[in-house]
Structures are given as C-alpha cells and as structure tokens.
Image 1 (cartoon, rainbow, N blue to C red):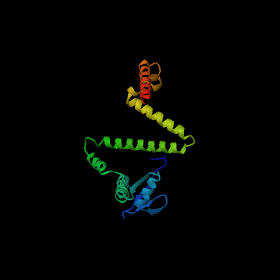
Image 2: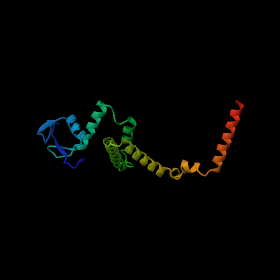
Image 3: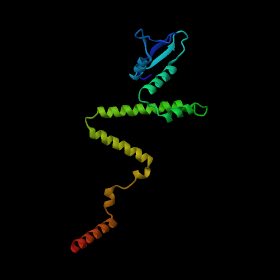
Image 4: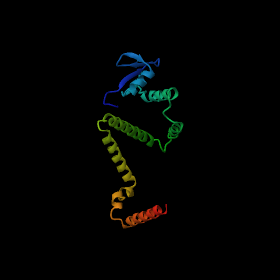
Length: 177
C-alpha cells in the first residue's frame, strides 16, 4: 500500500465487468489505471470465487499502456524480464525490482522537495555538490586526500623557480620585440 490507506476493492463479475465497491458503479480498466496512478492501491477479486486477480489486471494495465502510450519499458528490458523467469533468478528479480522502484521514488521525492525549497537555491546546489563529493570520495578515496590548490601553491620552491624562469623568459621576449 502506498499511503497506509486500505486498497480500493474492485470485484470482477462473471461478465468480466469490473465493479468499484466504493462508488457502487461499474468501472473500466482505464479508470482503475487512473486510480492507481493517483496513488491509491487496488485489489481486484473474482466476485464468485474470491480469487485475487490483482496481478493479472496490473499486467493488463501495463500491456495497455505499453501498446497505447509512449512505451516505458525498452525492448531489452522486456526481453530480460522474460529471461528472468527461470529457477536461477526467479527469487532475485522481485526483490531487485522492488528496491529499484523504491530508489526511484525516493529520488523523485528528493528532487521535488528541492524544487519546493527554492527559497535558497544556492544552498540546494551546495548541498547537492557536497553529496556528490561524498559519493565520489567513497568511490575514489584517493581523490578525497588530494592536496588543495592553495596548499600546492604555498611553500613550493619548484613552483617559485618555474615562475621566476617564466618571468625572465618574458623579459627576454619583450626585449627582442
């Protein structure tokens, strides 16, 4: 469940029509899709047997959306999903997909929060830069310990000598012209 609210119960009748138990009206698959997109979970059961048909209808909604609208799932992803229906990966895929969607939702929420907190856009940018530095430092520890530019320029006799030589060369060039 997405927000702690109980799922909307939809009953499928023998005629295959869907019945919204909250509004006491028949509903369409497209309307069920809109309800889910709005953030509400649904549970679809067979009226006679009580069998949970939710998964079957979620797949139908995905198929409808993929054929009608702009496809979200690239062909390679779909083929990999088909390949995942084997004994070796069957247990891993659901956990992977769930974790991936969780990360996606968290990222989207964080982006939305950042856009809503535009009172100090520079602070948001600085925070983002800091988080990127932390990530890079964790990935590449040698970068975190690199000396700062100011420290390189201070107390560096070799650099001072090079600057002196450059100045002398510049004087010679100026005298030639």
